[in-house]
Length: 320
Length: 248
Figure (cartoon, each protein chain N blue to C red):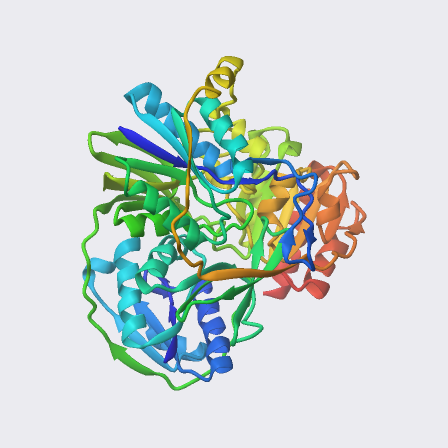
């Protein structure tokens, strides 16, 4: 028996969410006294996973697997899970993880809990804690089936080093056919994606118009952050839909979320309140965001943000 | 083209979230239930396919009689008929099996639904349903066109979008972008009148065990008050973020 983690790569490199999934898998493996097996596909440096506690690294390298396909990748994780007699399988909540996990759950006949935020509180019965009601509550959920599939919520457990000496093993899985074909990938180059960002800087209607977005972009650049916006801003066409965060937009679970000129409607908060630390800058002291935020400045974005950019530049120069 | 739209009946976003029975049950008292916002985008896209390409639409939901208000609303928006599977939706796997059992008995080319429901946020029913039916599946869809038996779908990926081509039959889990917010439908009086006469079939569930059990709910710890920093003191904010929050 074992715990198997699918450690996703992007262009050969492990994403932070993959390292978090391995760290989490290590914790579960320790609780259950089982070995931790990490599965990688076309990873440049698979050995990196031994730093986070993998006891064995199963390496798959195949030219046909450079582009993600949910059905094919679910089939591969299934084969490794069955080969390693996995009791628990862990995947992350990247867009690919969310795509393949439900398919994998059926293929493995595994009970699946998504949005999981903590290590099991009990192994018999197997109980995990997951986010529900758009981050407004948690549920302690029992997975009753023999095999268990865990979808780990982003930025919920953390990345922990746990150096081991891992065996590496090559594996050639059968690659199933899929009638879903990728014909194009459209990514803006050079920008930090909201999904991968540690810091997100987000603007709302308080910025008065798309011509003022330079402020948001400049602040984001200083912080190495992704840029985002509220729903009205994307609905009015000031910013592209891909930047809309909140319920029905993208979820945010960053370390730091800075909301500028966003009042904090409940739909917005539902999508961003998984972020660890929230900062709000708004002229209206009654804006609901002040109730959800950790730090706030009541003030005009056009006065506060340029000062913040300047002072953060000084800070970064001193602290890097 | 025959389209099924799966609808979840969920507490409105602005609902107070409370629990009863030693935190084991969601407290429905005074809570208004609505069509899951993500499913609304799916339904609106189905309506587009009906109006432009002559699709017929069946809406389907798993739940007790209370979910019929969301099914009737869907009929008022323009779906042709509705099916309710009379069972408590205990978990994602249970719902996927119930839906699959009905879909296996019906001719259908396309299943549209939301990427997740805003109550349990499981994001698992669409992918499970597609796998149980052995159909193609597109998740996180933000654009969908159907031509002959082929779908061209735009899928959200981390940092961008991906264009996918898939043959029918197909399950699509969508979100905003399938249609724009302004294209969401609100039922008009004529639609509401017509909806009363449209068929709503109640089916018995199949016997299937759920694989998970929601034991106990818990609310997040009360948040400490927002620390306010004077607008003239951005250095103070930077110091707090660095030394106290340790996020920069």
